[in-house]
Amino acid sequence: MSLKETTDVKLVLRFLDEIGITVIEKELGDTFLPGLDLGSNCIYIDYDKLLYPGDILHEAGHLAVTTSAERKLVGTDKISPEWPTQGEEIAAILWSFAAANHLELPLEFVFHPNGYKNDSEWLISNFSSQNYLGLPLLEWMGLCLGNERAEKEGKAAFPAMQKWLRD
Image 1 (tube, rainbow, N blue to C red):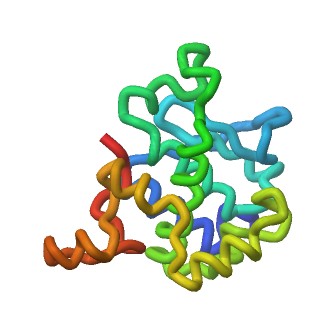
Image 2 (image 1 turned 60 degrees about the vertical axis):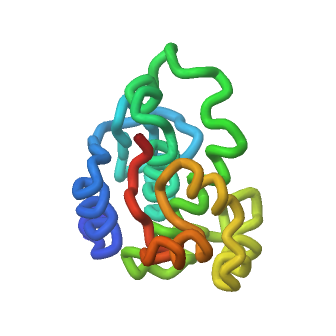
């Protein structure tokens, strides 16, 4: 069975389609994350080179936390050389946690030992303890609500998302 046909990858691809992130299968050269690259409003996947399917959710997180205007520029020379910022990186990490939680995938699927500059266990530990690094940023982006605001508004708190893509 190819990687594309695994249950977890099918689940991720269906989710990304539902929230409006296009996935395009194509042959890729050397990329920062093996088998993955980002383009204008899309993720390119080379299943022959993809090592960690959970990285798909992390890359989707980068698109999701980027403004809709800037999402169109991803993968072009018009995107800021500072993209993604450190704040956007933190937001993408937390977004990918919320997505894994939503899809009921084990956190190790996204936060595998060979990623996140050897901080995978630390991230899993923090998120499992409800220490959501970057939550104020995701809330500011309009994607979710922290406990206090969720309670005031009678809505679900993070890790529930109010929406998956930033305006």
